[in-house]
Length: 84
Image (cartoon, rainbow, N blue to C red):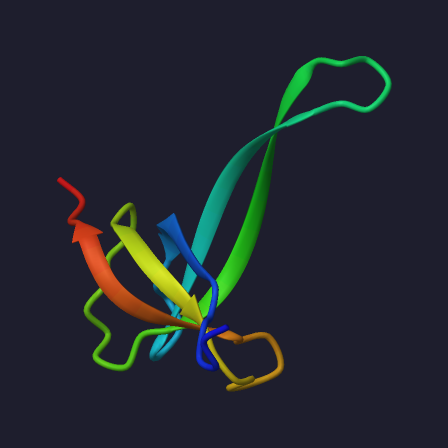
């Protein structure tokens, strides 16, 4: 197993109001355990954006990293698609 294998996620930037920090949301569809219906659930992560290059609604790839602050455990890898 590779030593530096870290999780990567693709999500949408929801906020870039903080300095060098973005909020990325990931939407999943999960099956409800009792009612067996697919329900949308959203998870939000704070990620480190060193150059402040992201804007809202950009599609980005983030990677897991060491804790950078109280809430930040992810960093920006690349911007896949810019918002229109």
